[in-house]
Amino acid sequence: MPLVQVIVLAIVQGITEFLPISSSAHLALTPWLFGWQDQGLEFDIALHVGTLFSVLLYFYKDWLRIIANGFGLALSSVDPTLDRNPKMLWYLVAATIPAGVAGLLFKDKIETTLRSPFVMGSMLVIVGLVMWLAERVAKHERTMDQMSLTDCLTIGGAQALALVPGTSRSGITMTAGLFRNLDRATAARFSFLLSTPVVAAAALKGVLDLRKHGAMDTNLMPVAIGIVVTAITGCFVISMLLKYLRTNSVLPFVFYRIAFGVFVLMKASLGAV
Image 1 (cartoon, rainbow, N blue to C red):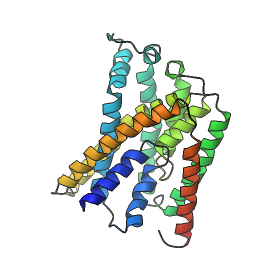
Image 2: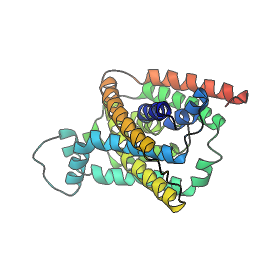
Image 3: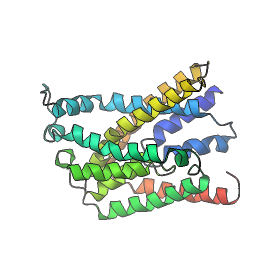
């Protein structure tokens, strides 16, 4: 695979995984846009490993505190938004279950039937409209320390829908958080924390499947570059998005989703995708 393709796809993954605009749709359509050959499952899995490194690197302090609080251990530093909610570890565990169950039940449909331009384009538009509604009705007043098990299960249930290409894991979980009246930055922060075990499980399963079928590429250089570039890009995007959402709405992402979704549907209807 050409180096420029490796870098472009890694940057696309790092940006679109964390912005609420669907990484699956963008990764599927980028090779078509540039006239490249499909990058293959192995490289897609490498990019998801890079995504995992992004959330682990950026949120490792949060995870250390969440795990310590969950087991009743004291840390020297203080984070009121997490320390006042010591059950957050178990809330995250419970919220991860719906996506895990949905993945096991609908794995075949997700990898075949649902990976069509019509599905991706439709979900880009539909979730964009739902996100717009959430932005309009949300009170934007609750923070991480005020989250309940009901909040987490609601967002976790929404995460299961992200298995449909074009939905966007961060988009649907942030939207669910807004409907629960979380402030925008908290909805995004919880969304990224919740994505960690799901992305880790998906990446591990992908690697094991490749090894099982003897499909591991002998040329590891593109894979390594893809992982590093995705991880660096992802950390930067997480930081910028959290800062942006402290004072701004999600409407620009709504407009982008709808415009991109319409574009995909038009191209698909003309048989160009």
